[in-house]
Length: 413
Image (cartoon, rainbow, N blue to C red; front, side, top):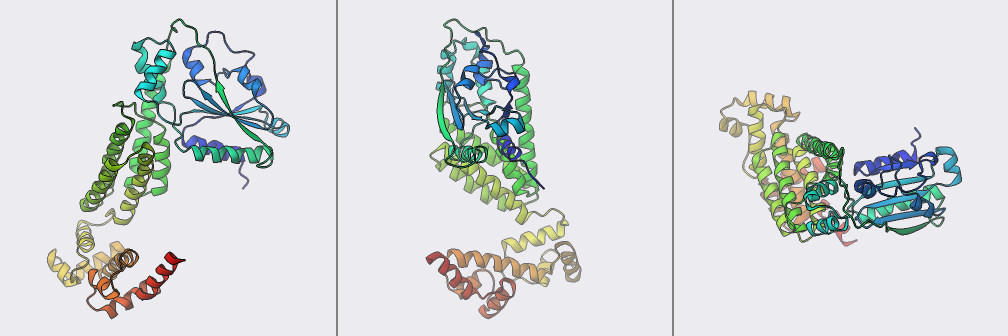
């Protein structure tokens, strides 16, 4: 199946809610309006044919222009080659607007003053900027731009990248700042943010890691207006909120609270220790990834209450002397009934589950500690090191000592 390159690029930017628009010849404006509406000027509304004709005429062949505006909005403009112009009927590709960082309270106040807006419109301005997606990974967007340049112009050396500044002048008088449909758009933006949030929590609760990460990228572009002026503190507050939401989602995924509490507490400490907004952004993705995997690895969904109790007991007491009879007696269940029920619901016998759990944890210990093979075996509940070695080789296809040697070789290579 042949996939169109531009469809791929459009999808990549769509993930971050960044517009990717083909500007066709008939859509080019004759001239820039003398008195544009302020939000029209802020957004350079491509769909309404309001992109500045002067800016378009300044673009050069085989050139990618990165447009920075006084209002902190950014755009990427690419000119079409004659071949693409004929095949796809577009003169330019316009990508944006996007922000590289959310504006601070002080920056918005300065913007409010620069735009000659009355102070009672500050919240409108704040809402407007909250609706603009943030593309934090400048290296990521640069990579996408270079990739598009290679495809459109035929090679990495066949095009140039230039930065442009939009220096439009503003009249001294106040704008008649009319939002027209903006309250509706703001309401729809909030609705979309909540919808994306629900989709994220649903994906996490199902242990669908890839879907959760995709949805998180989408949610990230719907920003909440800052509650405090300190950008780092505001980012930490949002991260704490995300941590709380994710732990509730995992709880809905029927994961034992002990797992959830341990992970939630660890992330809370990492959030508070973070020293930059960028670190918190990366931590957010890690949280989504690990909480989703927690559901995938430890969800009790589909298990009967009896099997849930047994699985949780084994998971938290794997180092103890475990047997079918002891566990059955502990939960007042017939050993034969428990054996049949456990096999039916998990697909493995109780002994097989215990051995798999112990071996998986021992693999982690072999990777992260210098403990002897005998000590590792004892830590995971195997009192006989020979039996441990035999089970390890059966499940992993290699002995514990050979596995550790393999890990050491990889580390030292």
